[in-house]
Amino acid sequence: MMPPHMGVLFTRKEIMKCPYCQHERTRVVDTSHDSRGGVRRRRECLNCHQRFSTYERPILATPLLIKQDGTREEFDREKLRRGILICCAKRPVSAADIDRLVGEIEASLQSMGRAEVSSRVVGDMVIAGLKAMDQVAYIRYAIVYLGLDDLSAIREEIDRLLES
Image (cartoon, rainbow, N blue to C red; front, side):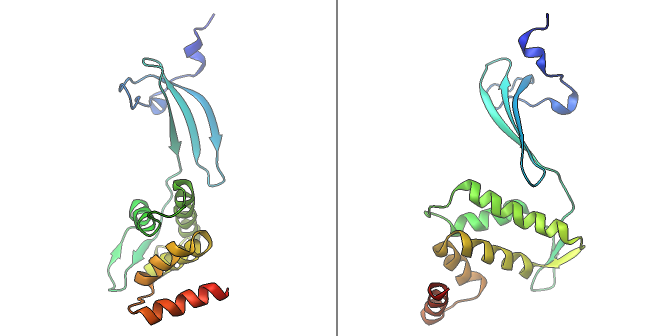
């Protein structure tokens, strides 16, 4: 009879170190898939028996972003996430909602199939996502992104938001 921890075959690709004790042997307890092709795995360490989750997502090519000054830079998922986190600070927006928005933007960029995209496209996607998610976070982002540099411009944007 096979020991209970041997229910999962271990290959070099599947070894995940335990974040608690750094042991190299874990077993997968549960696996679920999301709509964007990602895989969430619930794991248990075979040494300390702590449980933790890992998330795997496919790495697909994203286009280079063309900045306003004409320079190009690689799309940086974490930079986008940090920017959204800043405008959502102290707002009732969950980390899952932020991650979902970042994932949707990244998937949209990948599906364009283009080598380069204006950074303005990403900004427009963020604006649209925040507008649907949290209006205060939207205004915070819009102040910088849309260049609302005085109170009357900010008031006009708030009025437009309230009318819709």
